[in-house]
Length: 214
Length: 71
Image 1 (cartoon, one colour):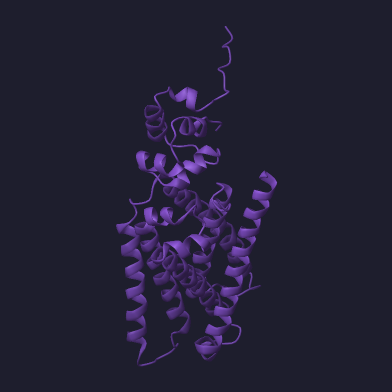
Image 2: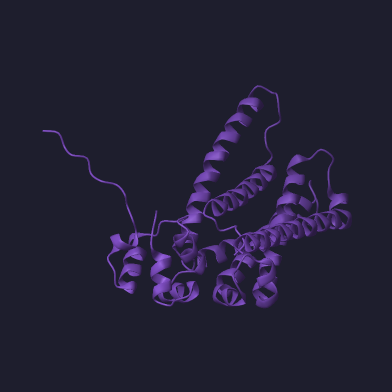
C-alpha cells in the first residue's frame, strides 16, 4: 500500500515537473519568436541570460499567482497538501507572485531595451525602474510575513548565493584579467545573480524536503 | 533532530494544519520539523512543548552526553 502511494506521489511529482518544463519551453520559444529575436544581438551572452532569467521569474510568478487566485486548481500544480493550504498562504503567495513577475519584467525590459542614443531610453528606464522599485517595496513590506522556516531558507539561499558568486566571479576575474574571456556586462551580472539565487532557493528547499510531493 | 512531534500531534488529534495555525507557522514548517528536515528555533520548540504539555527534551531527542572532565 505504502509502495503504491509512494509511486503515485512520485508520478505526480514527475508529471508536474514535466508539465512545468514543457510550458516553460513553449513560452520561451513563443516569446523569442514574438519579441525577443529582433532585439537579440548575436552572441550577446548578457542579453540571452537576462531573457532566460526574466522569463523564468515571470512564468514562475504567473503560475504561483494563478494558483493563489484559484486554490482548487492551484492545489493540482503547486506543492501543497490541499486548497485550504493555499487559502492559508494566500497573502504571502500573492505577494511573492507579484514580486517574481516584477523581477521578471525588469530583466526582460533590460534585455529588450534598445542600446545607444535612442529617444525612448527614458521610457525604458522608467518602466524598468518602476518594476525594480515595486519588487523591492513588496519584498520589504512582506519580509516579516513569512514564518521562521521561510526566513531560514532565505538566509541559507543568500549565503549559498554569495559563496558561489564569489567563486564564479573569482575565476571569471582571473580569466578576464589574463584576456582569456571578456568581463561580464552589468546585464549579465544581474541576470546571473538572479538565476543563482533562484537555484540556491530550490537547492535549499529540496534539502529541507520541501520539494517532495505531499 | 530526532523528535516526537508527529506522535504528540496525532495523540492530541491535531492535523498538521491545525497545529501550524495554533503555533503561528506554516504547514510546511510543521511538516519539515516532523520529518527532521528542519530544527525549529528555541521559541518554537518551547511553544510546541507547552502546547502538548510535555518537556522539550521529551519532544526533541538529543543523544549527546557530556564527556567526563579529566582531573
